[in-house]
Image (tube, rainbow, N blue to C red; front, side):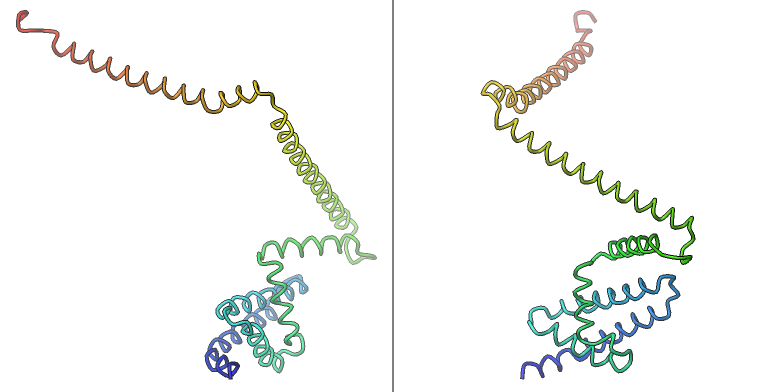
Length: 218
């Protein structure tokens, strides 16, 4: 009974999802992209994103996601074939959740293709191009090593700082507390007092100048 209610309540949503899915697939098929592999990956990523977004509209119902994917697969399979069955759509949704940021996906795919082309055998890739790709990969590896070294140095610095703090003498603690809290407060008080005094002096000078000529002088 509950399943029938879901179908009746969400017929328009499923139809909209179906039309959006068709648009994504058709756009991907008609898109003249150099990398066919990435175009296909991007298509599944977009499908996963659209399914996930629609799924969130009925997230209070535990079986809503399964219902959506099952019914979407029934509509897509006859038109586009086995690549759009229920299992494939579930994987597309999981794929999007793994890489929710499109730029990250593109970066990962570009690196994978570059590494593949650098190892290509025969004359698939020109020798000069392969040499440049290998140099690029070497730079990536070097960057990875540098990043790891920076991370390790940061961790060591934090550990050394904690160790130094834990081993401060009472005199050192007093000194640091004084520098951290008391000195700034004292400086603030002195600065404020100086401003007040300077303002009063200016006011007295102004009054003195204003009343410099008294009645007796006149």
